[in-house]
Length: 451
Figure (cartoon, rainbow, N blue to C red):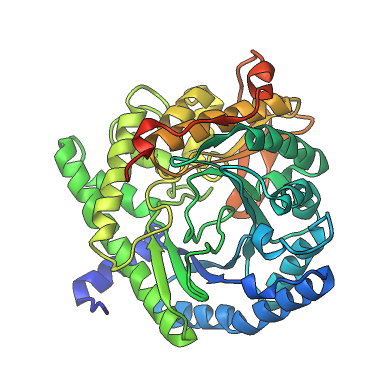
C-alpha cells in the first residue's frame, strides 16, 4: 500500500520538520544470524562479520539517499540481529566477548550508529548459553562502542525469573564499575518484543523473516506544538488533536519504511510510532504533559496525562500504517528529555512517580542514574518491581539503570549525543537483599491462562 500526500499535508510536514523537531528516529535493519552458528568461535565470528557486511552493505547509503531526496531527517541507521545467546549456543568458549567485538567491527564497517542483539531470553530459565552471554555482558558492552545488549527476565505467560533478576543486578554493578556507559547500552526486559527498532533493546526475534526493515518515528515537539492550539479545551479535544498529529507523523514513517524496503529489496516490517524525546529544547514528552495543564511533570495528574497521550498516539498511528509494531507509545527516558531532567532536579519527579508512569507508557524506567554505591540487591529489586508491572499488565516494560560510580544524589552523569545527561535520583534506603536472595520464579498471573 502506498500513500499520496496532498499539498497541504506536504506543507504541514515541512513545517513539522523545520520547526518542531520531527524526524525519523531510526531505520533499523533486522537480520537473522542463526545460520552463522558453529562450534568454533572463530568460524562463527567470521560468518557473522561476512553476513552483516554482505546484507547491510547498502543500508546507510540507501537511507541517506532517501533522507536527501525526501528532505526528511533520519537520525539513525541501525542493525538488530538474532539474540546472540541462540547464535552462539553451540560454541565451546565460556566468554562471548569475541562475538560482541565482531558485531562492533561489522557495525563500523557498514557505518551504522548501533547494533542490537547481544541478548538473551531468560524469562523462564537459563540455558548454558544464556548464562555465558549474561556473564560476558560487562566486558562485552564496555569494550565495544556500538553494541547493545538486552536480557528478557519475565513474561506474562512465564512469570518472573527471579534468579535472572538477581543476576542482572550484579551484572549492572559489574558493568558500571567498568564503565557506566556500558549500562546505557543494556536493557532488562519483561515481555520483550521481537520487532523493536529502538536501542538499546532491539533484537531480531526468532519469529521474524531472514531480513526486514523496521522504522521508528518520533515527534514530541510536533505533538507539543499541536496541543498549544487547544489550550483550555476538554480532554476529548486534546485526545483528538494528538490522534490527528500521530497519524501525520506515522504516515511519514510509513513512507520512509516502504521506500527503504523497495530500494533494499528487503521486506517492510513495522513502523514503531513511539514518541522518543531528545535532550533538545522543544523535543520533550514532559513538555507535552505540562501543556495539558500540569505545573511540572511529576506532580499529581502526571500519570493520567501520560495515559491519555500514550493511548491517543497508538490510536492515531495505527490508522496511518498497515503494520504498526515495536513498542509504539511514549518513551520517558530521563537523560534524553530536558523536561524530565528539570523535573527530577526540582524534586517534582521521583523514582516512585516514574514507576507509576511506567504502568501506562511504552516502556519503563529508562536511562535513570542512581547513586554509585547502590547495591546489586537494590538494583535487582527495582528490576523486579518493573517486571511485575509488565507481567501483570501484559505489556512490555524495560529498565536502563546507570549506577553513577563516585556520584551521589543531585550530581549529574553525562553521556553525550542523544543519550544526554542524567541527574542522580534518590532511592529508598531500606534493603531488599533478603527478598532478592529467595530466587526461583514469581508465578505468572491468573490472566495468563488464556487458551
